[in-house]
Length: 389
Ligand code: ARG
Image (cartoon, rainbow, N blue to C red; front, side, top):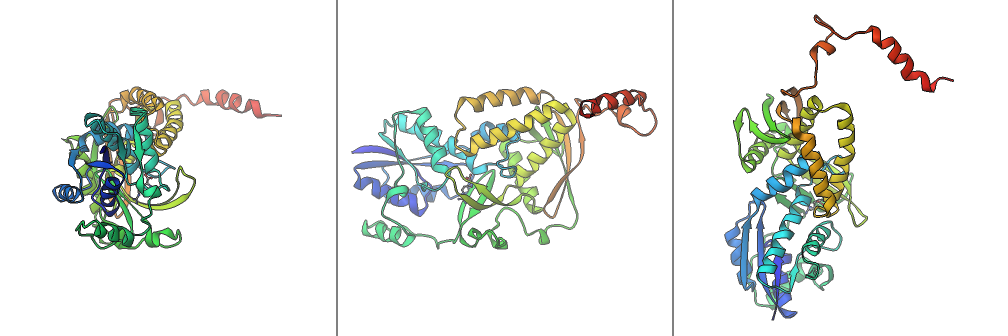
């Protein structure tokens, strides 16, 4: 028998893949990646074995996810189509990386995933895997198999005498990890229909959020968030803490029509409390410490960075080159931002840094003004000169 390493979630699709691969002559090693989805990993492990996996790997990738994927994207200000913090998109190259490492260790012939042929995730998995291991076989059963509905999938498992409980079908497709949550399908497929309140899990209904604003101070060192309210946190704990505070105040909801790489538009509802807070805060600190030209130029690169990640190109050299740019840019992004959270809004109300470029004596309209206004007459005349007839 040949060997395949399957990225296994414990859901119905990937559960069917295990016996399906057996029919094709493969023994399946199930790989469960813990990226903070909060599942019962013991139960999922059992399920994989019950379904016929010969071996199960379960790796906690949360630390690597936050430190090596989420924070670099934050430093780049990467928001896809100006909105999406890329929580799901960033997890895929990490999962693919470990899947290939396991495949290499196990001398497997192939890797497999449960992505459909309509989404972005297949691209992210496969491009990463091929860059790491050009000759590896990649099997994506869901793109081609005959199991079209959930009922057919359950029938299929029954026919194989695999007794697994299936939870009641939610009308939604949900992806969740430590950095956020995405919900699509069901009524959300109509772009005109407002998301029902019950689809949210990380954020409370803004009407039930406190009427009193929450103030939080976030401390950054070189563009990396380190402190909340003056207290130091490890990366994972910092993100968890911000999810908690943000969620309570209903911060981080986003209703978005986005352009998928495969050419279709889709409607997704996101919940990213920590991601929203961090992007707002870091951008604010940058506005204090970066000069005007750097700020404008970094905007272009932020867009580029976000598109690379979304389109499955995390692993290409350009991303690392952009990281080098952003590391350099953040040499001065050290300081603190104070945010006010209230019923879904998240606004900066204060910022400070020893690297601040804000010069009170130049800006002030009060005492101590050193701005030489007599220079402005000539400056403005020359500025408009090129456009005069
Ligand atoms: N649209 C997002 C992305 O491409 C999330 C994909 C998964 N969404 C979901 N609801 N299952 O990164």
